Image (cartoon, rainbow, N blue to C red; front, side, top):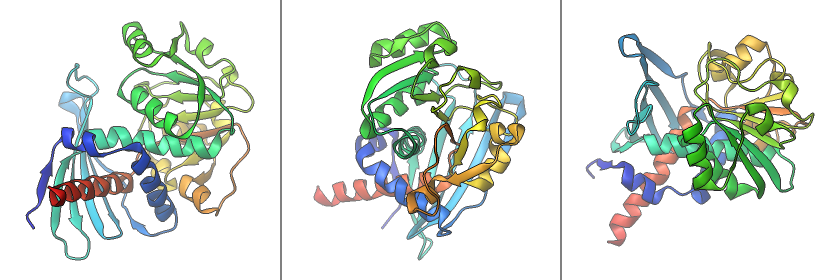
Length: 303
């Protein structure tokens, strides 16, 4: 069978959170259980254009592949700051199966893993959610969170007022004038900004808060100050966090567990306050790409 190309629109049509979240639970448990081959992400700076090019390979079960991803923070909408393609292979034979757009997969798998963390770490009640940031990941995270928990109130703050007001109009969130006001007494705080210096301070938080930090990836980038990092710290991969999580590196925080260890029961669910630091790892992309490929093939057979 010839390898196929799967467009962004096709990915968006077939990739659904109700299927993606369970698939990523399985992938994360396999990663922490040593059943995934996954080297650290390789990054090539493109300094002359203020961007970088990343290479993220993994072997997971009967598939393997790599995501090729770029990050150009200076891109002006409608051009996205993150863009990607994923090449998928059959691991038993090395056959190429598909090349597909990876931007939507990156968007959705990041939010889906955060939803898994939310479901594991937050109280089993209706939640007050504060979102710092109002871009693509703010939208995808809110959609994913609503698949796992009831949200009694959604708040938003963003450094760009126009974007914040647009997000609020689209989602029904309440806009706030400051980050401090938005997070006051919230059960869960989600940070999805492009900040390089902390925009969330620990003194603003409840003593039993859950913080999900997504926006800043890199040893010298961080959204959370040291006080936030005094809570229990959860990551996808200790190895990746030790090199790429600025919050962990600069605060000296100790990592309590990987998400996969919580899912398998190898580690118990910690008390709050707790921080989930998201970085994104290759097995998430490969698991999502496998879902997309299988869905497209099933549609082709049916037709």
